[in-house]
Image (cartoon, rainbow, N blue to C red):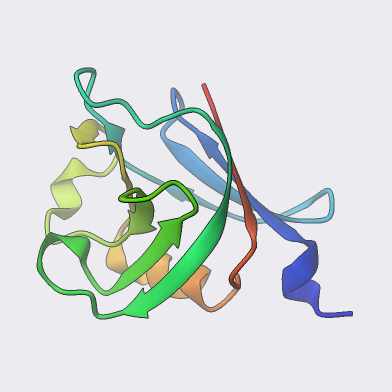
Length: 115
């Protein structure tokens, strides 16, 4: 069985942390930026719907689009924003972190966003 199919991403909004699990084992965690108070990152259960290398602009080096249109996990051209509430609702990561995550997940990977 493809190990990527057993993986899931948890976004811990208040901790500003993304955790990658394989089954119930933590295999990686990364600091993130989340949405501002006026444009919060939406809580809920989603999946990775699209993967794009080098999306350009503020999205850094990778884009993992969620099944919730217009929201995603992506790199940033503003690394100082990581650890803060800075986005319009997306999840920002350091470019080296999104590049590592991008290679470890596939289309359909569950993304669970909790407080």
